[in-house]
Length: 362
Image 1 (spheres, rainbow, N blue to C red):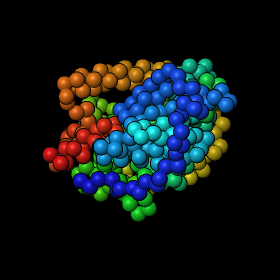
Image 2: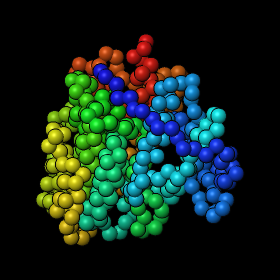
Image 3: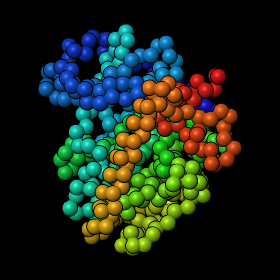
């Protein structure tokens, strides 16, 4: 199976002076595979930011490529519904990315706290996500991992912006090129990503609109369209395009909403709605349904709890594997020949991409 296309990375316009001259660096806010995030306060104004600290990894070309692509993506984007990069500082060993400080938490956590949640509310959320996705695509960026965990709110205010975050699995897609690496999160993967493992045909930006369709489905009923006892069963259903609108959960959801989902969860990416199609659809452009979706809120609370529990369990398993020297994720080599093996080949983290490349060289 071919790898994703190599992308020329433009030189960073970085500040060479120590970041501590301009910012007070505070407590750790979080950490990832290749980075640590700390609170930064701009000395001249008191404004607060998130400072992402990344080692340069000059001696590890695979890690360096992933870091370079993430920085390049952050440099390209500038949109209300995408996390914003403000500054880059550089030392001999590290990059310091000064990012918008996001304080509102996860979107789904906010929704389950609402007393009033309607189709109109869901429509406005989907519109914001799609506007962000549309911007990414105009910048030749494919996110590849749209899911609830990567949709955050800019602040705790009621009118906070929805922000697309986490570009660890994202890619830059030059015109005329295709992507080939099977990356993403089970349940949100587009069928062409999975089929690429068999066919090697690759995929393009349409995968993000499939992800939007999955998120929209969950927003309206509180559970995902594709589910099963294990990831391979989920992948089977995705590749078959099999999903339903079961009663009673969908009884009060409008036909317009179902029509839009039907145009997003389409197996053929050429026939799938584009961002522009979504924004022009009547469910987005002219939604007036304000009836409270009481049942949806109840199901979303259950979904949110299961999602967080599953994330915690995987974190424990991942740590156990790391301490034993095993790889967390990676692609099978050679590519699998049947759907039942897809789960062995899907990469769910940036670390998995590195493991995949190492596997090829063994």
